[in-house]
Length: 574
Ligand code: MAN
Image 1 (cartoon, rainbow, N blue to C red):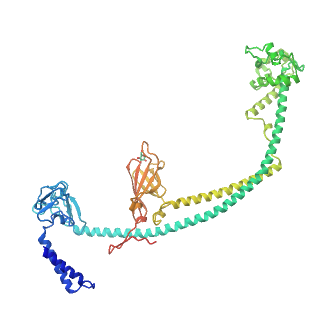
Image 2 (cartoon, helix red, strand yellow; image 1 turned 60 degrees about the vertical axis):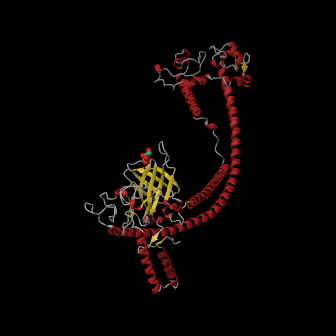
Image 3 (cartoon, rainbow, N blue to C red; image 1 turned 60 degrees about the horizontal axis):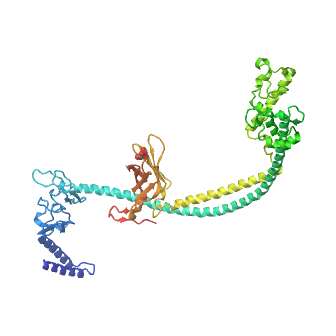
């Protein structure tokens, strides 16, 4: 063995010497042939044949003629115990070609196709697993397996070629996407620059318009304030006059005998003066109202009495008129009697508490001209109703501020225009600001190292299964809509790329979708792969409310392969 190696070494040194000038001499060719021959002899004489079920890679581990060490190193056994149909190693490595061990792996060489491992339990089980038929023993009664690796290899090669063609097509589209993406990026950046300039100008205009607005508003405010002040002064006067009228009306109402003085006995019908609440207004209570005076003249009543009773005083006329029903005409009325509500001259027998329907029964009524009386009552009733309505509407018309004078109107119109101009300028500035922000947001999205995913932005793709139509709008959102109708459910909004560090762009994550009842917010993982077109291929829900989409796109076709040589190129044309 040592001689053999030495000779080999010698020959090798000669070979390297003779091939120095790149061209191999005849001598060195002969040398090489000899070395190869020697090598074959050396190997043939030093080791046993590769055991059944062992791969070429693992062959050296079974080369020793005397001993075999289990591959997990746990035990050393005699070499002849390998493939003896008895399991010696815990890791099953001593029986790669029989089904004796539970965890053994049989290597199908599958020459012409793809080598593979199968569990040793499938060895000689009557089913052909390896395309080279090596897993089934030959011999009488054994199943006849046909070696079809060549055919499979050919078909596989054809399929691979087709795949390469498609991937190459995708690669070309990707180059186009890269171009588009780069152009779009530049376009967006340029738009932002332009918009920033426009915004500067818009802001200047806005500032000017703001100044003009303030200039127009100052005289407007001044004129409006003056108008308001004037009106408030007038209102004050109206209020005073009304108050005066009210005092005077109250005095007139209380002065039953119209002698120009109010005396305690004239207050007895006013229940609001029943201080002790016993149901009657006593002389003393009435006197107390008049501050101990026997009678009060109008001026005394106005200055001294009224301020202390005006909060309590209830006009009997008002009180009754509020409760009256519309007067009926003579024909319609009960028994043809005219309506005689509170507004008729009460005369000596006037009883404010008396029911209005009964008023017509009074004898004295015969003295009135019935037609005239009816007219007066109707008029008074109408006025009372109008007043009531006004009050209900929240204020009397006379208290509404009058329109502005012409000069003020002109100022208001000018200020309105200045305000409109400012608003328009402000809107323009805000619109530009929003456009800039939108573009900046788009630019912040990671569209791939070469912007190759850009063409997917602003597009949506759908996939329909038995129950739902799923939608993917890359870099925006994912959703789900029942086929039977109903609204769209958000399955998440764009989050980030989530592939492994070395391959980030193969997974997209969309999160924060509609909350799942008693569960998480819905989210979607999109798994991408190279394809000739953008297509949502599948959608599933591996866990409740957690969705998985499969999407193919040329943007991920990063490798160009020469169909003849198989040489690959993954250089993007930038
Ligand atoms: C809807 C759909 C389903 C989801 C359930 C959870 O029916 O969004 O995908 O599993 O809600 O309740």
